[in-house]
Image (cartoon, rainbow, N blue to C red):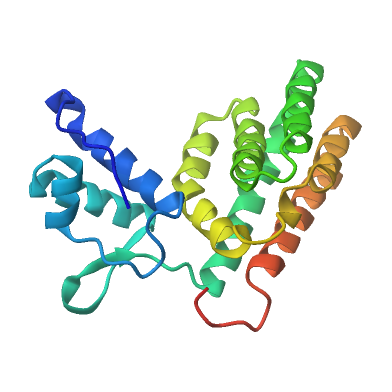
Length: 223
């Protein structure tokens, strides 16, 4: 595993860049669930102090990407089936609010066009898991951003790391069945209908299907 050295960066941004580098290493699969994250080794690889690494790891604990194991050793978190189901219920609430607020916008047609472009990118990435993942998350993030609700966007971004880990653990070696264009088009159609209740139901159904795929009901073992 290689992590780009950060030693040449301005000190004022070093902590933020360290957090970003470690987050990318985890969510891209360079570190897998259960892998030990040693301060000394990470500091050497990144070219920063152990204190900077320690501070960054604490932040990633708050994001749910890192957890303390035996004797306080930090490891990449494994999202349990229960947590996966909770994660998608929260996403349903957030993105359900997003579609409701989009429908209320006077410029809804412009927003729909932007979402159609994002939907098209899902079709353009067939066979490329990494590109498909970025297009999928890009669609859902854009959905939140186009609502105009910045608090909603912040809440979604706080879940993004765990969303990535959940999807990668399940689908990185298989077919990205939840990340197809066909799975997302009903969301767009529901927004275009201007029926808030129907649009919210479509989002809830999308997330319920995803939760069942990534954490089937009754499966209580960590992924």
